[in-house]
Length: 92
Image (cartoon, rainbow, N blue to C red):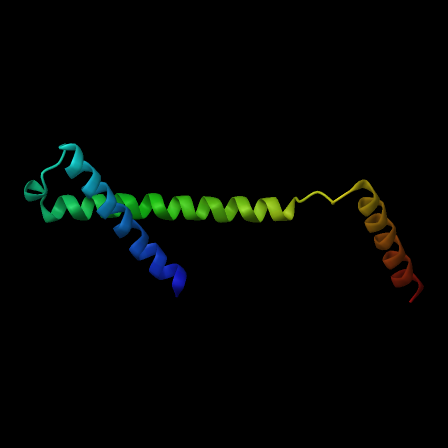
């Protein structure tokens, strides 16, 4: 639920800051904006926000899956533990 709300309202916050910044720099007159232009800006930001969020999620998953062991000693212990588990399953 929280992720859905963030996905909907995140671009709105970015859109408000964008319009405010463009108004301050004189590049945009709020009175000249039409509803269609605001919806277009919102949809563009919604897509960009979703792509950025998914990219961060994908990167996090890949980094966690391919995380190297903490030290070489840990890698050796992990290999030994795996071989012991395989031997114990073969004996049963």
